[in-house]
Length: 193
Image (cartoon, one colour):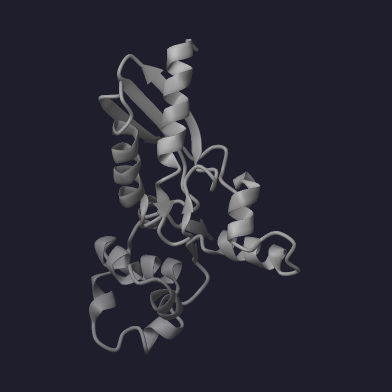
């Protein structure tokens, strides 16, 4: 990489340290979310990930990252590319970020790391739909969009929903279970069958 490009990358990384994850209050650089920056003339291509797939803050972060990158002299265009490999883990955070989140020299450090990892959305197809609907606010709409139109019938979740699982419902309504699985994955869920 040319000296001018290295200088721009350094300036971009500095600008990105002002972009904070609003939930964790730590910047995207120290969280380890920035995987790389490529410069092509006046275009910066930022490769980044999120702490969880389907993060509701992805648009917020992307907009703020673009704004920060475009504040650097010599950069007129910014592309943000989301990547999912390598998968983000708390080990990617800097010491400063871990300290800020109280994860260093803390007997509960392991518990805090596990809590961040547990924030991933997981749909277990063996769990009754009532429990899933209580746990995930967008569950009912995703199910409805997949063809489970009856899910919005008043009282359904508190009766049949207490024992009905997604596979049983798909079988009863003659819906493709793979399409349902894909619908949840597209919304950032990890599906367990």
